[in-house]
Amino acid sequence: MVTDPSAEFRSRATEVGAAWADELVRVLRADNRKIVGEWPGTMSEARTRVLARLRRKLDAGVLDDLAKVAIVAARCEWQQVLRSLRRWD
Image 1 (cartoon, rainbow, N blue to C red):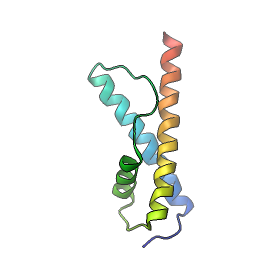
Image 2 (image 1 turned 180 degrees about the horizontal axis):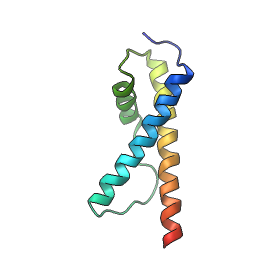
Image 3 (image 1 turned 60 degrees about the horizontal axis):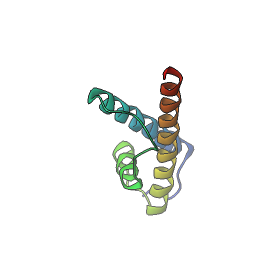
Image 4 (image 1 turned 90 degrees about the vertical axis):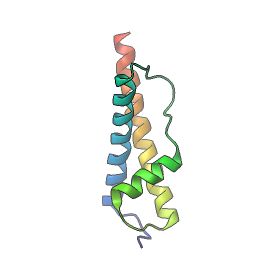
């Protein structure tokens, strides 16, 4: 069981978050839906995605920390998309 998140795990969690945001943007665009507002993802979703990517048993505290890293990365990616859309309005 992982009880201390390494820099590698944090990096992977960041990748998870960015990919998650990119995936949601693609889905919304494919459905001709608007990309607006704050990041809609939840901590529960972040935990699930981190676990799926790392495929390891993680201490609950470590999982929460890595899920927060993923959420921050997803929010940043989402905000970048919103900023780019505003430039074209």
